[in-house]
Image 1 (cartoon, rainbow, N blue to C red):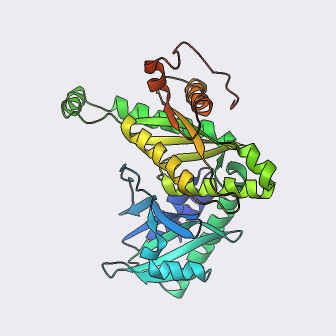
Image 2: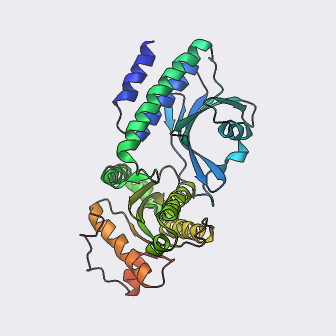
Length: 349
């Protein structure tokens, strides 16, 4: 009982989604004596639902997410989890199934206003009595209430993406993580990495804008315009990792914080998302495209300067044909932009 109270105190003390998720699945993992527990992101794009692991707790520790390249669609199609798929169709609060290895799985979908963005997974629980279920239900009620509170303050009400006012905190987290990783490197290890000729991994900031969005609103009406925004947000969720951060800054403007990847991979990831949007059939509207500008995140530079560079790259993309992805440094090298130009007072701030 003392342990459960401790977890509840932790849950109610957080004002951060990641910490809240870690506290909840730690409590459930300990309560059920499970082999591991996971937080799964659920993204819906058109008629497809995708499942993507976000955080895993195993042996009392947070298991780091693999910083692998993003899959073409991001995550797994829910059809790979037949029991979960059927339970979601039935709008169940508790779903039981088996893993490929035959281990028992329990899924706890977190329904918020009839929408599902998060699902908790408990693997191979050893304790699963009626009393355990009652305690789990209580924890989930607290969790759902706090999710609602955080979502209300941190999420854009239309798309469900992070809102503009949460950007500074998320940007600061990336800078702290980068600084800690840099300071913890041994010089000899750095030399070995360089000799291995592996592309250097960086963090990236991208600004994207829906092309001719005013035309969509004028021609089809604001309801269809809102639907385009929602579908773009869903495509973003299914195309990027849970470690990346996705924001709607207002109107048709979105911002992406892409974590730990090379410049070549970043270009490929942003281009792939742009192509996914171009190939998607938006109901009634048909074809929609986006333009993207991105810049490298320098640990020692303020967000406004980096945002200004990405904004300049976006402006170049919009002014030179639209439906393209432009990297700030490449534009400077080619002479299309000049490094001394500054846009620190970009409209985003």
